[in-house]
Length: 214
Image (cartoon, rainbow, N blue to C red):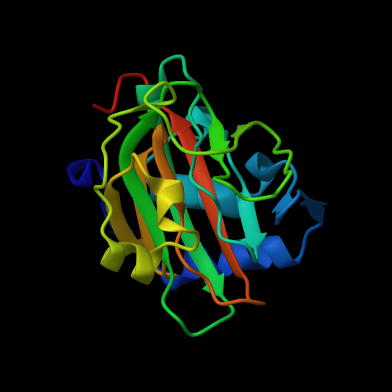
């Protein structure tokens, strides 16, 4: 999987422009996240799409996100033609000093856009993703593997109990303004540990390509 992930340096001017867009416009709040409406119309979005060398016509989804809870493991690509979808995660700011990471796992969803909430008591309704409680199963994910995540990795990076991630393997990438994280949208990913009563702001862009990424 690591050969499908790349890090891209982005000039501060783009980050400042995107932050100005977020804080000067109104949007809406989902169960856990503050977002914006009609982001395709913002000039700052068009500028960063051009910086990435992508076509605005290929931009099919995602949004700004400001959140206080670490995202659960999830995947964002539809089941059909899932290998054609490309993610760009663009960190904009964090309101704490600790390092925070994006965890990208080696596994893909067999059941389409899904958020796995483990054994939490959360009853969250997402805009697009279906919800699965309990452990990962071979029915749900491609590449299921037992005991691949070490206790050391879990203690450093994972915000929820280790057994909630059973079946997964992966790598942590530092989430920091100035560095874009690019990877296939159909790979399961999540937020790493965050300090309590804190938040971070980012932008994710999802593109549909003409051919499969891998």
